[in-house]
Amino acid sequence: MRKPRLLQGSRLIRIKSTGFVAGVVLDRETGLVIDTAPIVRFMVDWSVEEVKAYCRQRGWEMSEVHFEDSDELPDKARDV
Image (cartoon, rainbow, N blue to C red; front, top):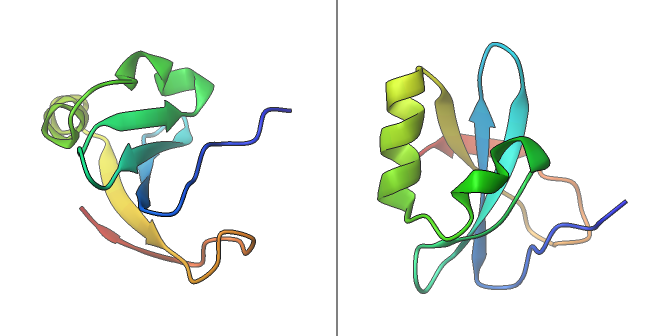
């Protein structure tokens, strides 16, 4: 199983629909998607604005996942 590219200085965004929950990783500096779950792989290189617009159009929820250490599981999320 491939490990996601969650690097220091990146943001993890959770996308929730009626059929799936997926994550996208944003580069904090550029705001571009640098890694995704397979179901939303087409979003790689999209801007956060493009992701927001697409999710809004589909009726999907977005939230940013916050955690203290990249070795720990995320436990908090807030709307993006």
